[in-house]
Image 1: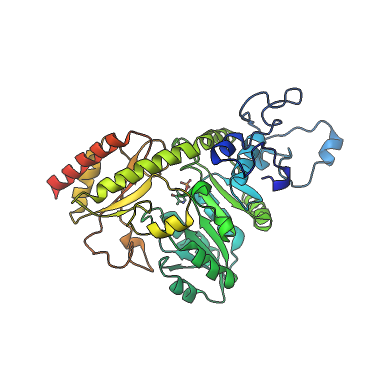
Image 2: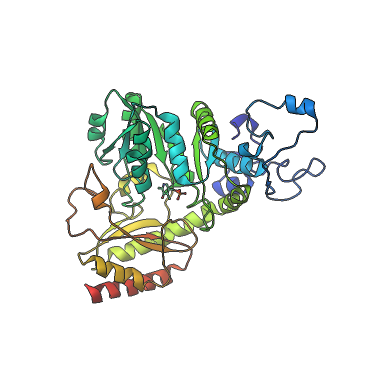
Length: 415
Ligand SMILES: *Cc1c(COP(=O)(O)O)cnc(C)c1O
């Protein structure tokens, strides 16, 4: 919610990101009472389905469907409004932010806002698997056709556009192969051909990449990852300029989307330390990526922050930050040897998701799910297909290196 003219944070875009993360979403009326505005630091958890009206006149005069007005629980209360306002303030070019119960719900919410039966959606071939599933399932059932394109080939992307193409879904870097797209090139084509562009910006967050300033129409995040940061809550967001924000909001209301105030408070808490965590995780990930790159067991490191890694030049050109999520590909071996590697890790949990304070490792096998391109780029040998994805948390880097060394030793013993 919120538009730029009613911002109430003492921080402005001229302040540094740490300052803005501290100040945002803390309107005095949300952190206090009329007699004591700003009495506490964080907005209270407003658990409410019913909002009460003082009398019938007030009920009859209830405001139009506006942000920041008490009405009924499905339109949120100050805890959710504060989080939405904070995310809007951190997203240059956004007039507002809609919150969804998960990242997948945010992607569905955005696509169902943009697409109509008969439309064609173009989706990057590196997209998150549930996004692909949405194309084959939910969207298909509603009469939308999804076609996939090779994100490394803007000319092929343009050739895929047909008169029925309505929108494009990008995700850069892709969350499995960590492929960076040439987003400005793809967006220039999308714009010239009248497509609506939606970007899943979960990897970078607005601290690392600001899609709307690059010409995207809607930016989506899984807040479950970096913003929450503590692996204890799920949520998603979609932010956009005035026109798309209004449509996103109405569609989300139509779908009955609402997020719990408890979870919104957890997200606000995570947001305060976002820049610190991302800085630390990025630095640690880069050290680990360099170390892995020097190991004979590793065929390829897929980490755009690492010089020489695929996408590094685009990352340097377009991004202002990284994160702790990257992958590496083993030098041959078997699926069982890779299992032995992951099983031998003590500090890396085995589990989906990423962006938490704790490190995680999961196998990555994107080859069979891709339909428009090979992974991660031309020239990859077929046997180099056993990948491991790491989400680097806040443990000491030296401890993580020692853990990975043990994992590689287990891999070698098995291979
Ligand atoms: C996890 C993830 C999502 C989905 O988020 P949930 O909150 O788990 O529903 C969407 N996009 C990317 C890139 C993700 O990694």
